[in-house]
Length: 168
Image (cartoon, rainbow, N blue to C red; front, side):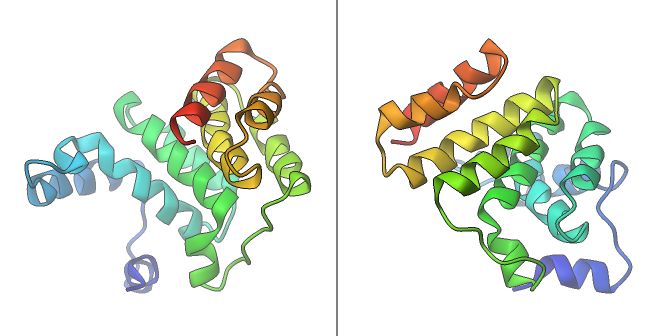
């Protein structure tokens, strides 16, 4: 179901004021004993995906909303935004953008976005890049490692390589 469009069609907008309340409510109803959603901040990841749909693919606008959230919510919000931009599943379902091909040229274009950010936003961007690299290079960790080293800061290279190893 197109939840993002439904929410937007009634004038509801995801922002730094509505997201914490949504996550609090979801944590009450989604907890199943085994669910990752037992933590309030876990809902920020899918919210990040929806934010990119709400901003019609504008990564800077969506990331700006994430930056205004509490530190507990920021990480997962950013990963949702950057992952959606790299995969474009929801963006394509909503007719906003077409999925990008899984190739090295696409990876280099996405890396430029990561280079535009600093701090937690940059780290989460590089973390999601590792997932893209695993897909592009079909689990070849040497290539994942090589591309993760395109990150300028050691912290971001490490986050990318560790996440990449975990997704092989």
